[in-house]
Image 1 (cartoon, rainbow, N blue to C red):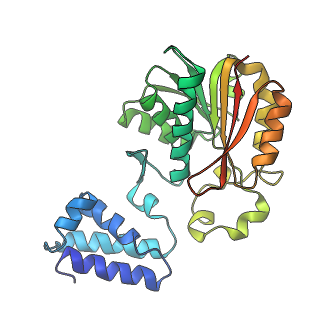
Image 2: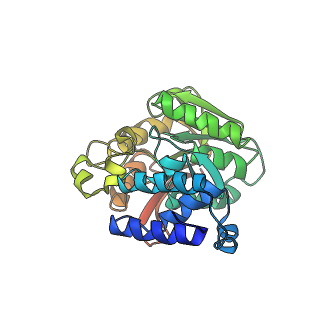
Image 3: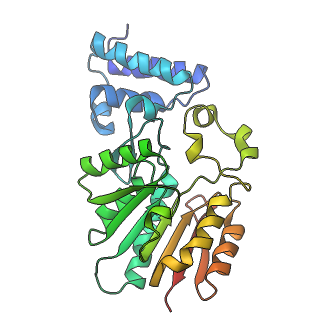
Length: 285
């Protein structure tokens, strides 16, 4: 039994490393159990840890060694400085997707010069990370989130409620739930991993995150193709489409959107790691 937070953290970090897991996860788990921020934990490292807290903490550490993502263990992940509920029905939001929000905010200021009610849809919302964040960051937008999974939509609704984001959730496949109206902005981080890539994924991903939200046919390109075919009838002028992509998919997705919108400006944007990560299609005339 460890007596202090420091001893617990040190023991857990070593145990995770011995089991080929990231040592840093120990800190996240301990912060969660103790209800402390990073800075609070650092200040309180030499405080005593209760038996109950240590036992709960250690059960989480052991569970993570089996491959279960720590975000599912604690039931949340931080995205754009907000805590989102996550479970096995939704993908864990990735830091790269925060950059999608940043890119959209920049483009909104240029494309839509006056503040008006923008009709924005997030296709395949999962946890609602994109939809909720967009509503919080662009409050004058009317945001709709869609997903084929009713369980995922329930998670998105919970996150919208907890974070006080007034969004509408609609169940259905891709753009089907929103096809009856026109849109100013369509965003999507759809399943884009090809089946052949499954063996390259970490066990924390392939064994635990929902395959419905990971994989797509046609080497991961099927859903981009379907959306590119269906979106031209649904977009206002001006308007914006923003897709997150796999880093090798930029040219193919750009070509699909350029074919669908011949007069649009289509660009591939790199993420902070200098990998192709987003494709934006801007219609301004």
